Amino acid sequence: MQIQYCFRALALSFSCAALSPLAHSANDPGGFRAGDMYLYNSSLFGISTGNAGIMHIDAVGSSGQAILGPFGSLNLSAQQIAYDPFRDRILLASSLSGTGDVHLVDAAGSVQSMGLAGNLMSLLTPTGDGRIYMRRQGGPLSGIDYVDAAGNLHGLMNQAGTAPFELVAGQSDLAGAMIYDPVTNSLFIATPDNSAACPGGATTDVNFHRVPLSVGGSQVNGAVSCAQFDVDMVSGSEDPVAFAYGPGGSLLLVVDTNSSFLQCRMLQIDPQTLVATPYACNGDYIAGATSAGTFAPTRGQAVVLDTFSDNLRAFDGGEMGEGTVLPVAGVSNPGSSGDEATLITIGPIPAQFGLTTGTTQLSIAIPGSQTLNIDAGSAKAGAFYWVLGSATGWCPGFEIAGTHFGLVFDAYTNFTLFHPNSGILPGSFGVLDPSGKANMSLSLPGSLDPTLAGVVLYHVASSLDPSSLLADWASNPVALELLP
Image 1 (cartoon, rainbow, N blue to C red):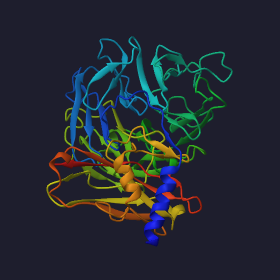
Image 2 (image 1 turned 90 degrees about the vertical axis):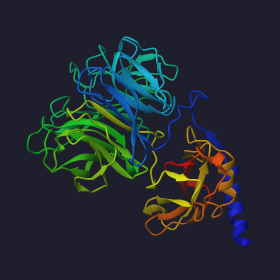
Image 3 (image 1 turned 180 degrees about the horizontal axis):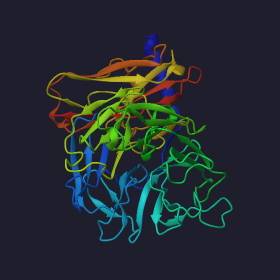
Image 4 (image 1 turned 30 degrees about the vertical axis):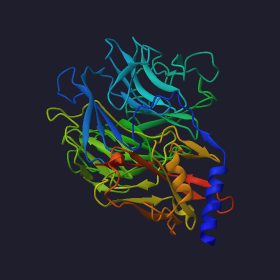
Protein backbone atom coordinates (compact mmCIF):
# COMPACT_ATOMS: atom_id res chain seq x y z
CA MET A 1 0.00 0.00 0.00
CA GLN A 2 2.83 2.42 0.85
CA ILE A 3 4.59 1.76 -2.48
CA GLN A 4 1.31 2.26 -4.36
CA TYR A 5 0.81 5.58 -2.54
CA CYS A 6 4.32 6.73 -3.52
CA PHE A 7 3.68 5.88 -7.18
CA ARG A 8 0.41 7.81 -7.10
CA ALA A 9 2.02 10.86 -5.48
CA LEU A 10 4.80 10.90 -8.07
CA ALA A 11 2.32 10.51 -10.91
CA LEU A 12 0.30 13.43 -9.61
CA SER A 13 3.45 15.55 -9.44
CA PHE A 14 3.91 14.84 -13.16
CA SER A 15 0.31 15.33 -14.23
CA CYS A 16 -0.28 18.44 -12.12
CA ALA A 17 2.84 20.18 -13.41
CA ALA A 18 2.38 22.74 -16.15
CA LEU A 19 2.37 20.96 -19.49
CA SER A 20 3.73 23.26 -22.20
CA PRO A 21 3.13 22.06 -25.77
CA LEU A 22 5.94 23.04 -28.12
CA ALA A 23 5.66 25.28 -31.15
CA HIS A 24 4.23 23.54 -34.19
CA SER A 25 3.09 25.02 -37.47
CA ALA A 26 -0.23 23.20 -37.88
CA ASN A 27 -2.16 20.06 -37.10
CA ASP A 28 -0.73 18.49 -40.24
CA PRO A 29 1.55 15.65 -39.20
CA GLY A 30 4.11 14.50 -41.73
CA GLY A 31 4.02 10.85 -40.65
CA PHE A 32 7.64 10.65 -39.52
CA ARG A 33 8.87 8.33 -36.77
CA ALA A 34 11.39 9.64 -34.30
CA GLY A 35 14.78 8.02 -34.72
CA ASP A 36 14.28 6.98 -38.34
CA MET A 37 16.88 8.06 -40.89
CA TYR A 38 16.51 9.50 -44.39
CA LEU A 39 19.13 9.51 -47.10
CA TYR A 40 19.38 11.90 -50.04
CA ASN A 41 21.73 10.65 -52.75
CA SER A 42 22.28 12.29 -56.13
CA SER A 43 22.96 8.80 -57.57
CA LEU A 44 20.35 6.77 -55.72
CA PHE A 45 18.73 5.51 -58.96
CA GLY A 46 21.75 5.69 -61.29
CA ILE A 47 24.89 7.61 -62.12
CA SER A 48 23.47 9.73 -64.93
CA THR A 49 21.78 13.12 -64.49
CA GLY A 50 18.27 13.03 -63.05
CA ASN A 51 18.69 10.02 -60.73
CA ALA A 52 18.61 11.66 -57.30
CA GLY A 53 16.27 10.27 -54.67
CA ILE A 54 15.36 10.05 -51.00
CA MET A 55 15.35 6.76 -49.07
CA HIS A 56 13.71 6.00 -45.72
CA ILE A 57 15.80 3.86 -43.34
CA ASP A 58 14.30 2.48 -40.13
CA ALA A 59 15.68 3.56 -36.75
CA VAL A 60 17.89 0.50 -36.21
CA GLY A 61 19.15 0.39 -39.79
CA SER A 62 17.63 -2.95 -40.76
CA SER A 63 15.83 -1.92 -43.95
CA GLY A 64 15.35 0.94 -46.38
CA GLN A 65 12.92 2.01 -49.07
CA ALA A 66 12.96 4.90 -51.54
CA ILE A 67 10.11 7.38 -51.00
CA LEU A 68 10.92 9.92 -53.72
CA GLY A 69 12.72 9.98 -57.05
CA PRO A 70 14.28 9.86 -59.47
CA PHE A 71 14.66 13.61 -59.96
CA GLY A 72 17.37 16.07 -60.95
CA SER A 73 20.10 17.14 -58.54
CA LEU A 74 21.10 20.78 -58.07
CA ASN A 75 24.76 19.66 -57.86
CA LEU A 76 25.34 21.87 -54.82
CA SER A 77 26.65 18.97 -52.70
CA ALA A 78 25.96 20.40 -49.24
CA GLN A 79 22.92 19.46 -47.10
CA GLN A 80 20.27 19.07 -49.76
CA ILE A 81 17.81 17.75 -47.15
CA ALA A 82 17.11 18.41 -43.46
CA TYR A 83 14.30 17.54 -41.06
CA ASP A 84 12.24 20.45 -39.71
CA PRO A 85 10.26 19.45 -36.57
CA PHE A 86 8.30 22.73 -36.68
CA ARG A 87 6.73 21.81 -40.04
CA ASP A 88 7.16 18.05 -39.49
CA ARG A 89 8.57 17.77 -42.99
CA ILE A 90 11.81 16.97 -44.72
CA LEU A 91 13.19 20.06 -46.44
CA LEU A 92 14.50 19.33 -49.92
CA ALA A 93 16.50 21.73 -52.08
CA SER A 94 15.78 20.64 -55.65
CA SER A 95 14.43 21.60 -59.05
CA LEU A 96 11.31 19.40 -58.78
CA SER A 97 9.13 22.34 -59.75
CA GLY A 98 11.24 23.12 -62.81
CA THR A 99 13.51 25.62 -61.12
CA GLY A 100 15.51 25.80 -57.92
CA ASP A 101 13.25 25.72 -54.86
CA VAL A 102 12.90 24.32 -51.34
CA HIS A 103 10.20 21.67 -51.03
CA LEU A 104 8.41 20.12 -48.07
CA VAL A 105 8.31 16.31 -48.22
CA ASP A 106 6.20 14.11 -45.95
CA ALA A 107 6.94 10.50 -45.00
CA ALA A 108 4.84 9.20 -47.90
CA GLY A 109 6.89 11.18 -50.43
CA SER A 110 4.27 13.86 -51.12
CA VAL A 111 5.89 17.16 -52.12
CA GLN A 112 4.87 20.79 -51.63
CA SER A 113 6.79 23.93 -52.64
CA MET A 114 7.77 26.45 -49.98
CA GLY A 115 7.33 29.23 -52.54
CA LEU A 116 11.04 29.94 -52.98
CA ALA A 117 11.13 29.20 -56.72
CA GLY A 118 14.14 30.56 -58.56
CA ASN A 119 16.51 30.09 -55.62
CA LEU A 120 19.30 27.51 -55.55
CA MET A 121 19.68 26.57 -51.89
CA SER A 122 22.04 24.41 -49.87
CA LEU A 123 23.13 24.01 -46.22
CA LEU A 124 19.49 23.68 -45.11
CA THR A 125 19.49 24.29 -41.34
CA PRO A 126 16.22 24.36 -39.36
CA THR A 127 16.14 25.67 -35.80
CA GLY A 128 12.94 23.96 -34.65
CA ASP A 129 10.97 27.19 -34.10
CA GLY A 130 10.10 27.89 -37.74
CA ARG A 131 13.34 29.47 -38.95
CA ILE A 132 15.41 27.72 -41.62
CA TYR A 133 18.91 29.04 -42.36
CA MET A 134 20.44 28.26 -45.73
CA ARG A 135 23.01 29.24 -48.31
CA ARG A 136 21.48 30.90 -51.37
CA GLN A 137 23.44 30.86 -54.60
CA GLY A 138 23.44 34.41 -55.90
CA GLY A 139 23.23 35.91 -52.41
CA PRO A 140 26.19 37.50 -50.58
CA LEU A 141 29.33 35.55 -51.48
CA SER A 142 29.67 33.80 -48.13
CA GLY A 143 26.37 34.99 -46.70
CA ILE A 144 23.44 33.17 -45.13
CA ASP A 145 19.71 33.63 -45.72
CA TYR A 146 16.84 32.38 -43.61
CA VAL A 147 13.14 31.68 -43.87
CA ASP A 148 10.94 32.70 -40.95
CA ALA A 149 8.03 30.73 -39.50
CA ALA A 150 5.66 32.33 -42.03
CA GLY A 151 7.85 31.29 -44.98
CA ASN A 152 9.30 34.71 -45.77
CA LEU A 153 12.90 34.88 -47.03
CA HIS A 154 15.38 37.22 -45.31
CA GLY A 155 19.10 37.82 -45.34
CA LEU A 156 21.08 37.30 -42.14
CA MET A 157 22.51 40.71 -41.23
CA ASN A 158 25.84 41.57 -39.67
CA GLN A 159 26.18 42.55 -36.01
CA ALA A 160 25.58 46.23 -36.74
CA GLY A 161 22.49 45.41 -38.79
CA THR A 162 23.80 47.55 -41.66
CA ALA A 163 24.73 44.92 -44.26
CA PRO A 164 24.35 41.20 -45.03
CA PHE A 165 26.60 38.97 -42.94
CA GLU A 166 29.52 37.30 -44.71
CA LEU A 167 31.57 34.59 -43.02
CA VAL A 168 34.66 35.59 -45.01
CA ALA A 169 34.35 38.75 -47.07
CA GLY A 170 34.70 38.04 -50.78
CA GLN A 171 34.91 34.25 -50.36
CA SER A 172 32.21 32.38 -52.23
CA ASP A 173 32.87 28.74 -51.33
CA LEU A 174 30.79 27.71 -48.32
CA ALA A 175 30.46 24.05 -49.32
CA GLY A 176 30.60 21.99 -46.17
CA ALA A 177 28.08 21.61 -43.37
CA MET A 178 25.96 23.81 -41.09
CA ILE A 179 23.90 23.20 -37.93
CA TYR A 180 22.06 25.28 -35.35
CA ASP A 181 22.94 24.87 -31.67
CA PRO A 182 20.08 26.08 -29.42
CA VAL A 183 22.16 26.12 -26.23
CA THR A 184 24.56 28.77 -27.56
CA ASN A 185 21.98 30.19 -30.03
CA SER A 186 24.59 29.91 -32.76
CA LEU A 187 25.10 28.61 -36.25
CA PHE A 188 28.06 26.27 -36.67
CA ILE A 189 29.56 26.27 -40.17
CA ALA A 190 32.21 23.72 -41.15
CA THR A 191 34.38 24.53 -44.17
CA PRO A 192 37.03 22.51 -46.04
CA ASP A 193 40.76 22.76 -45.42
CA ASN A 194 41.26 25.14 -48.35
CA SER A 195 38.19 27.34 -47.80
CA ALA A 196 37.39 29.98 -45.17
CA ALA A 197 40.28 28.87 -42.97
CA CYS A 198 40.45 30.21 -39.43
CA PRO A 199 42.45 33.47 -39.27
CA GLY A 200 46.09 32.52 -38.87
CA GLY A 201 45.21 28.82 -39.07
CA ALA A 202 46.50 26.01 -41.26
CA THR A 203 45.19 25.56 -44.79
CA THR A 204 45.28 21.77 -44.44
CA ASP A 205 42.78 21.33 -41.58
CA VAL A 206 39.00 21.22 -41.43
CA ASN A 207 37.50 24.45 -40.00
CA PHE A 208 34.42 24.99 -37.84
CA HIS A 209 33.05 28.46 -37.19
CA ARG A 210 30.59 29.51 -34.48
CA VAL A 211 28.31 32.38 -35.52
CA PRO A 212 26.35 33.78 -32.53
CA LEU A 213 22.83 34.97 -33.32
CA SER A 214 20.62 37.69 -31.88
CA VAL A 215 17.36 36.90 -30.12
CA GLY A 216 15.05 36.08 -33.01
CA GLY A 217 18.02 35.24 -35.23
CA SER A 218 17.82 38.11 -37.71
CA GLN A 219 21.42 39.20 -37.30
CA VAL A 220 24.79 38.14 -35.91
CA ASN A 221 25.33 38.94 -32.24
CA GLY A 222 29.06 38.97 -31.56
CA ALA A 223 32.38 37.90 -33.00
CA VAL A 224 32.67 34.71 -35.02
CA SER A 225 34.83 32.07 -33.30
CA CYS A 226 36.82 29.52 -35.26
CA ALA A 227 38.75 26.32 -34.54
CA GLN A 228 40.42 23.57 -36.57
CA PHE A 229 41.20 19.87 -36.42
CA ASP A 230 43.72 17.92 -38.50
CA VAL A 231 41.97 14.71 -39.61
CA ASP A 232 44.26 13.69 -42.48
CA MET A 233 47.90 14.26 -41.64
CA VAL A 234 49.02 12.72 -44.92
CA SER A 235 47.26 14.30 -47.91
CA GLY A 236 45.69 17.30 -46.20
CA SER A 237 42.34 16.90 -48.00
CA GLU A 238 39.61 17.46 -45.38
CA ASP A 239 36.06 18.12 -46.55
CA PRO A 240 33.24 18.30 -43.97
CA VAL A 241 30.19 16.45 -45.29
CA ALA A 242 27.78 16.45 -42.35
CA PHE A 243 26.88 17.99 -39.03
CA ALA A 244 24.52 16.19 -36.64
CA TYR A 245 23.46 16.45 -33.02
CA GLY A 246 25.64 14.14 -30.95
CA PRO A 247 25.47 12.70 -27.43
CA GLY A 248 26.06 14.83 -24.37
CA GLY A 249 25.14 18.07 -26.11
CA SER A 250 27.99 17.71 -28.59
CA LEU A 251 27.92 18.26 -32.34
CA LEU A 252 29.02 15.36 -34.54
CA LEU A 253 31.06 16.42 -37.58
CA VAL A 254 31.75 13.90 -40.36
CA VAL A 255 34.74 14.59 -42.62
CA ASP A 256 35.66 13.08 -46.00
CA THR A 257 39.42 12.89 -46.59
CA ASN A 258 39.56 11.04 -49.92
CA SER A 259 41.95 8.61 -48.25
CA SER A 260 41.62 4.99 -47.19
CA PHE A 261 43.91 5.18 -44.17
CA LEU A 262 42.51 4.69 -40.65
CA GLN A 263 41.53 8.26 -39.72
CA CYS A 264 39.20 9.89 -37.21
CA ARG A 265 36.63 11.18 -39.68
CA MET A 266 33.93 11.45 -36.99
CA LEU A 267 34.54 14.29 -34.53
CA GLN A 268 32.68 15.50 -31.45
CA ILE A 269 32.69 19.27 -31.04
CA ASP A 270 31.84 21.00 -27.76
CA PRO A 271 29.62 23.96 -28.77
CA GLN A 272 30.72 25.98 -25.74
CA THR A 273 34.49 25.61 -26.11
CA LEU A 274 34.88 24.62 -29.80
CA VAL A 275 37.18 21.80 -28.65
CA ALA A 276 37.05 18.85 -31.07
CA THR A 277 37.85 15.27 -30.07
CA PRO A 278 37.63 12.07 -32.13
CA TYR A 279 34.34 10.22 -31.80
CA ALA A 280 35.36 7.26 -33.97
CA CYS A 281 38.01 6.41 -36.56
CA ASN A 282 37.13 4.50 -39.72
CA GLY A 283 39.43 2.86 -42.26
CA ASP A 284 41.66 0.48 -43.48
CA TYR A 285 38.87 -0.37 -45.87
CA ILE A 286 38.30 2.04 -48.82
CA ALA A 287 37.18 4.79 -46.45
CA GLY A 288 37.96 7.66 -48.81
CA ALA A 289 34.31 7.76 -49.87
CA THR A 290 32.75 8.69 -46.52
CA SER A 291 30.14 10.88 -48.15
CA ALA A 292 27.53 11.53 -45.43
CA GLY A 293 26.77 10.78 -41.79
CA THR A 294 24.47 11.27 -38.82
CA PHE A 295 23.96 10.12 -35.24
CA ALA A 296 21.28 7.46 -34.75
CA PRO A 297 19.92 7.79 -31.17
CA THR A 298 17.93 4.55 -31.28
CA ARG A 299 21.17 2.67 -32.01
CA GLY A 300 23.31 5.01 -29.89
CA GLN A 301 25.87 5.13 -32.72
CA ALA A 302 27.15 7.33 -35.52
CA VAL A 303 26.18 6.10 -39.00
CA VAL A 304 28.15 7.02 -42.13
CA LEU A 305 27.55 6.43 -45.82
CA ASP A 306 30.35 4.54 -47.61
CA THR A 307 29.83 5.17 -51.33
CA PHE A 308 32.75 2.98 -52.41
CA SER A 309 31.39 -0.21 -50.84
CA ASP A 310 27.82 1.13 -51.21
CA ASN A 311 26.70 0.58 -47.64
CA LEU A 312 26.02 2.22 -44.28
CA ARG A 313 28.44 1.67 -41.39
CA ALA A 314 27.65 2.23 -37.69
CA PHE A 315 30.27 3.18 -35.09
CA ASP A 316 30.34 3.32 -31.31
CA GLY A 317 32.15 6.15 -29.59
CA GLY A 318 35.87 5.31 -29.47
CA GLU A 319 35.57 2.58 -32.10
CA MET A 320 38.31 2.11 -34.71
CA GLY A 321 38.09 0.11 -37.94
CA GLU A 322 35.32 -0.95 -40.27
CA GLY A 323 32.33 -0.47 -37.95
CA THR A 324 29.14 -2.52 -38.31
CA VAL A 325 27.78 -2.77 -41.85
CA LEU A 326 24.01 -2.24 -41.77
CA PRO A 327 21.87 -4.56 -43.94
CA VAL A 328 20.32 -1.77 -46.01
CA ALA A 329 20.61 -2.29 -49.77
CA GLY A 330 20.56 0.36 -52.47
CA VAL A 331 21.98 3.31 -50.50
CA SER A 332 24.48 4.13 -53.25
CA ASN A 333 24.74 3.24 -56.92
CA PRO A 334 27.49 0.63 -57.60
CA GLY A 335 28.75 2.65 -60.54
CA SER A 336 29.69 5.71 -58.49
CA SER A 337 31.59 6.84 -55.40
CA GLY A 338 31.88 10.13 -53.60
CA ASP A 339 28.18 10.80 -54.26
CA GLU A 340 26.51 14.06 -53.29
CA ALA A 341 24.61 12.78 -50.28
CA THR A 342 22.98 13.82 -47.01
CA LEU A 343 21.95 11.47 -44.18
CA ILE A 344 19.61 12.82 -41.49
CA THR A 345 17.83 11.60 -38.36
CA ILE A 346 14.23 12.43 -37.46
CA GLY A 347 13.91 14.07 -34.05
CA PRO A 348 13.40 17.24 -32.04
CA ILE A 349 15.70 20.25 -31.78
CA PRO A 350 17.57 20.21 -29.49
CA ALA A 351 18.17 16.50 -29.90
CA GLN A 352 17.83 14.10 -26.98
CA PHE A 353 19.63 10.86 -26.31
CA GLY A 354 19.89 8.08 -23.75
CA LEU A 355 17.36 5.43 -24.82
CA THR A 356 18.38 2.67 -27.21
CA THR A 357 16.95 -0.59 -28.48
CA GLY A 358 17.65 -3.24 -31.08
CA THR A 359 13.98 -3.91 -31.89
CA THR A 360 11.37 -1.50 -33.26
CA GLN A 361 8.69 -4.00 -34.38
CA LEU A 362 6.78 -6.76 -32.57
CA SER A 363 3.90 -9.00 -33.65
CA ILE A 364 0.68 -8.81 -31.64
CA ALA A 365 -0.01 -12.48 -32.48
CA ILE A 366 2.92 -14.04 -30.61
CA PRO A 367 4.72 -13.23 -27.35
CA GLY A 368 7.66 -10.86 -27.73
CA SER A 369 9.57 -8.10 -26.00
CA GLN A 370 11.46 -4.89 -26.74
CA THR A 371 14.41 -4.20 -24.46
CA LEU A 372 14.92 -0.52 -23.68
CA ASN A 373 18.38 0.50 -22.52
CA ILE A 374 18.46 3.68 -20.43
CA ASP A 375 21.63 5.75 -20.07
CA ALA A 376 21.01 9.04 -18.28
CA GLY A 377 24.71 9.57 -17.51
CA SER A 378 26.69 9.06 -14.32
CA ALA A 379 25.44 12.36 -12.87
CA LYS A 380 22.02 10.71 -12.48
CA ALA A 381 23.36 7.71 -10.56
CA GLY A 382 20.89 6.54 -7.92
CA ALA A 383 18.03 8.70 -9.19
CA PHE A 384 14.54 7.40 -9.88
CA TYR A 385 13.79 6.74 -13.53
CA TRP A 386 10.38 6.59 -15.15
CA VAL A 387 9.44 5.44 -18.67
CA LEU A 388 6.37 7.13 -20.14
CA GLY A 389 4.64 6.37 -23.43
CA SER A 390 2.28 7.60 -26.13
CA ALA A 391 0.16 5.75 -28.68
CA THR A 392 -0.51 8.97 -30.62
CA GLY A 393 2.93 10.23 -31.61
CA TRP A 394 6.02 12.12 -30.56
CA CYS A 395 5.81 15.51 -32.30
CA PRO A 396 5.62 18.25 -31.11
CA GLY A 397 5.69 16.86 -27.57
CA PHE A 398 5.38 18.80 -24.33
CA GLU A 399 7.51 20.23 -21.53
CA ILE A 400 7.31 19.76 -17.78
CA ALA A 401 9.33 22.22 -15.71
CA GLY A 402 11.58 22.90 -18.70
CA THR A 403 12.18 19.23 -19.57
CA HIS A 404 11.02 18.25 -23.05
CA PHE A 405 9.16 14.97 -23.57
CA GLY A 406 8.93 13.76 -27.16
CA LEU A 407 5.44 12.36 -26.61
CA VAL A 408 1.92 13.44 -27.51
CA PHE A 409 -0.01 13.23 -24.23
CA ASP A 410 -2.85 10.70 -24.51
CA ALA A 411 -4.61 7.92 -22.60
CA TYR A 412 -1.56 5.66 -22.88
CA THR A 413 0.62 8.41 -21.38
CA ASN A 414 -1.83 8.52 -18.48
CA PHE A 415 -1.63 4.75 -18.11
CA THR A 416 2.18 4.79 -17.94
CA LEU A 417 1.96 7.56 -15.33
CA PHE A 418 -0.49 5.87 -12.96
CA HIS A 419 0.37 2.21 -13.58
CA PRO A 420 4.17 1.86 -13.66
CA ASN A 421 5.73 -1.61 -13.56
CA SER A 422 2.45 -3.17 -14.64
CA GLY A 423 0.86 -4.63 -17.74
CA ILE A 424 3.27 -4.63 -20.67
CA LEU A 425 5.77 -2.37 -18.86
CA PRO A 426 7.48 -4.31 -16.08
CA GLY A 427 10.45 -2.30 -14.86
CA SER A 428 9.19 1.05 -16.17
CA PHE A 429 9.92 2.68 -12.80
CA GLY A 430 13.06 2.08 -10.76
CA VAL A 431 16.46 3.35 -9.69
CA LEU A 432 19.40 4.07 -12.00
CA ASP A 433 22.63 2.18 -11.24
CA PRO A 434 25.96 3.85 -10.28
CA SER A 435 26.58 4.58 -13.98
CA GLY A 436 23.16 6.18 -14.44
CA LYS A 437 21.89 3.19 -16.44
CA ALA A 438 18.99 0.75 -16.32
CA ASN A 439 17.25 -1.75 -18.58
CA MET A 440 13.59 -2.61 -18.93
CA SER A 441 11.51 -4.72 -21.28
CA LEU A 442 8.21 -3.96 -22.93
CA SER A 443 6.54 -7.37 -23.10
CA LEU A 444 3.63 -8.36 -25.33
CA PRO A 445 1.78 -11.54 -24.34
CA GLY A 446 0.60 -12.40 -27.86
CA SER A 447 -2.96 -12.98 -29.11
CA LEU A 448 -3.79 -9.27 -28.75
CA ASP A 449 -6.74 -7.53 -30.38
CA PRO A 450 -6.10 -7.59 -34.17
CA THR A 451 -7.21 -3.96 -34.44
CA LEU A 452 -3.98 -2.96 -32.67
CA ALA A 453 -1.97 -3.89 -35.78
CA GLY A 454 -0.39 -0.76 -37.20
CA VAL A 455 -0.33 1.15 -33.91
CA VAL A 456 3.05 2.73 -33.11
CA LEU A 457 3.93 3.16 -29.44
CA TYR A 458 6.56 5.67 -28.36
CA HIS A 459 8.46 5.61 -25.07
CA VAL A 460 10.67 8.16 -23.35
CA ALA A 461 12.81 7.55 -20.27
CA SER A 462 13.14 10.28 -17.67
CA SER A 463 14.89 10.83 -14.36
CA LEU A 464 13.41 12.62 -11.35
CA ASP A 465 14.94 15.38 -9.27
CA PRO A 466 15.16 13.93 -5.73
CA SER A 467 13.84 17.08 -4.05
CA SER A 468 11.02 18.19 -6.35
CA LEU A 469 10.20 14.75 -7.83
CA LEU A 470 9.84 16.48 -11.20
CA ALA A 471 11.59 15.28 -14.31
CA ASP A 472 15.03 16.83 -14.76
CA TRP A 473 16.09 14.77 -17.80
CA ALA A 474 14.26 12.99 -20.62
CA SER A 475 15.57 10.78 -23.40
CA ASN A 476 14.88 10.52 -27.09
CA PRO A 477 11.59 8.85 -28.04
CA VAL A 478 11.88 5.25 -29.22
CA ALA A 479 9.21 3.70 -31.44
CA LEU A 480 7.62 0.25 -31.40
CA GLU A 481 5.38 -0.71 -34.31
CA LEU A 482 2.77 -3.38 -33.62
CA LEU A 483 2.58 -5.83 -36.52
CA PRO A 484 -0.17 -8.41 -37.24
